[in-house]
Image (tube, rainbow, N blue to C red):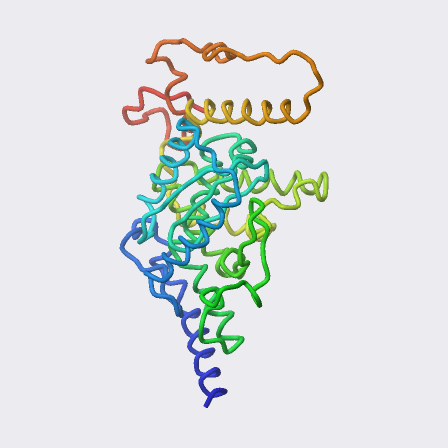
Length: 338
């Protein structure tokens, strides 16, 4: 009976996989009206949220969370805007971890951590939004607990090990100096492909240029090829392989109708990035105290011209206008165009 149950469950598991990629998933107009989290899952939504909360508490006990109100509010606002334009059915808690590692990870149940190193490495708000949208897609699809369920099926396990007081049998992933069960962070190729596709849609619906997601992954891949090992931790749970980049480009061309213009970046992104850079530089100086005098720059004395009028172009989002849309853009009196 045990073997029969296992075989039956495994067959059911792969049957669900066959129907995962329906046409609704490829249509951004269906966002919010589809169940992208369907599939074999032994975790109820309540248990998934409780699991994510437990893991998030462990992260916060061991990692340094940035409590700077400007940085925290900005990253949370960018993330929540993406969540509102996603298929997610759980509320999100979004926090920034003070680490130079270029990464972000979302735990089951909507507990989302963005590394400050990711913000510093991104050149635009759209690039940051692309990575965040990808992680939001993992939560919307319930990939963490569905992946855990698959592992338990293969091992004929019936009770999640996490509720038995340990990570034994799961392996571990070093995320922000916190040991977390890799089961909930490392996904199958199919799950990564799905998160790529949905993440592009969430960016697109929010108003960001979806090409920025591809641009960022190409940049990361290029850096790794030039200096192998220099960013070995970067997206270790979802490496930017060539085929994923090509597939993402194809999804953009086939399923996302070009808009007259997209948001590329904002002055807020530049301000937050500069604020983080100052924090990181200060930390490096403090760690390497060589006795030299330290300078503190007064607020507003940066090179960005600081005290311009609130109605200046610097305060408006930078927009990318689609060349094919012609010069008759609809009432966009504001942004700078790329």
